[in-house]
Image 1 (spheres, rainbow, N blue to C red):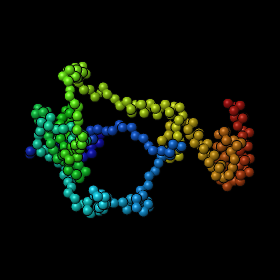
Image 2: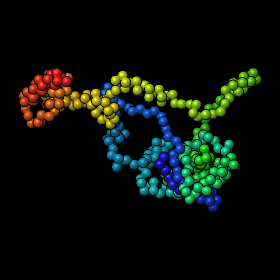
Image 3: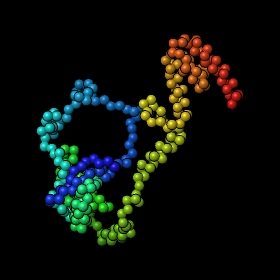
Length: 304
């Protein structure tokens, strides 16, 4: 893993120099939007909704849309005046019982690794969090914006989890009405809970969708259902793909010169001879060279 941030955790007069690592990564399956006919990727242009003209990156600014639909343009100078923080400190504000933190507030998770000079203080903080069964509520500046987060211990490593601000958590705008619940139904529900009771093991679960997509893609590749595009940056490395690409290139070159490839379209040897011919030779001379190559081909086959 690569550290994405360096700073220190401070609680009281104790300072723990640490490195910050992203603790999670997404394995979501992503798809490209492509042309169904040939597999070419779909490109998007930056077009102004008012004049219909394409806009260069240099002419793009940040705009804040008001509730009544008005657009306020913010310049770089305007944004520079906003309150921001570049502090390299994770400041512990208080230690709170773990059950008081609503999991819905959690956003992103990071591992904290101590620098060598702060290993002992790191161990002290880790032990204190574990023994007290509390989380440390902290403030930290990430990407020039102050966030509230918590520190907790997971597998002997202190984890920092940034949190959403309270006003970012939506409240349901509906009421749940379940009607009268009978005692016998409640008893049966309890029995069901007891029957399915157990300990959580993350390894027992797997992403069936991602696995199914990979199997589907593999099956299509093995079945030859692959769109080869001119802009593709990946290659299977198979000789047959290289040969097909060469044949298509030769055919395209002939078409551009107005030549026909009826005589030797399926013979790779003549195509190679034609590719070696000087660019300024006439079409008649090229045809003669191809016929000569065609006559030599059977001799090579007999020799083998």
